[in-house]
Length: 193
Image 1: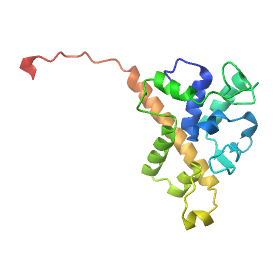
Image 2: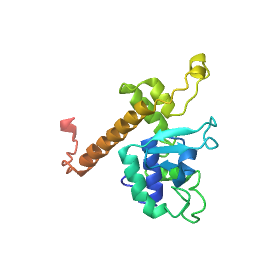
Image 3: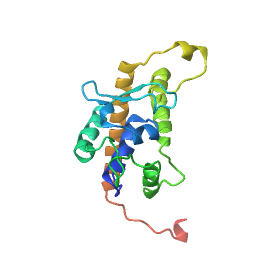
Image 4: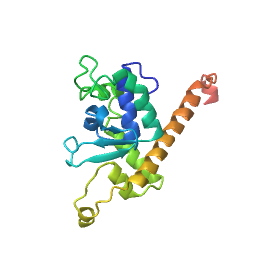
C-alpha cells in the first residue's frame, strides 16, 4: 500500500480496512460522528451492519493516528472517506478494489480478503476464536452464540493493537527488504546447470 500512487483517501481507506478488518460497506459509509475519540472506538450503526446490530470497533494507536492525519483532509465531509468529486457522498463500491488492481493484485486479493487474512493470522497466533469472531461481527446459528452476547471489548482492544503492531512489523521488514541493493544476477550457462 505504501507504493500506491492514487488518491490519498483511497490509500487511507485501504489501510483503515487492513487495521480494522471490517466490511467494505462499513468502511465506505464510515462517518466522522461515529468515531469516539475519547474511548478510541468506532461505533458502526446497526443499519450499516449485515446483522443489523450496533458494532463497536476498538481502534489501535495506528488506526487513531491514521484518522488524525486524515481529518484535516476529509474532516469537512460527513464521510471519513468521501468521494473525490462530491464530498457529500462516500467513495464508490469499487474504489478500493480498483486500487488493489492498480497495485497488481487483480485476481489475487479483494477488499474482503483483509478480513480473511486477519482472521487467519489472528487464529494462527493464538487469539481466542470468540474474540476474533466478535471483531468480525460474525453471528453463528448455534445455541451458544444465541446466548453468548459478550462483546469482548478489552480482549478485542488488545487484539487490535497486536494486529496493528504485527502489520507495522511487516511494513518495516518489507520496506527493508525492498531497500536492499540487488545482488548481481548470474546468467545460467549449460556448464553451470
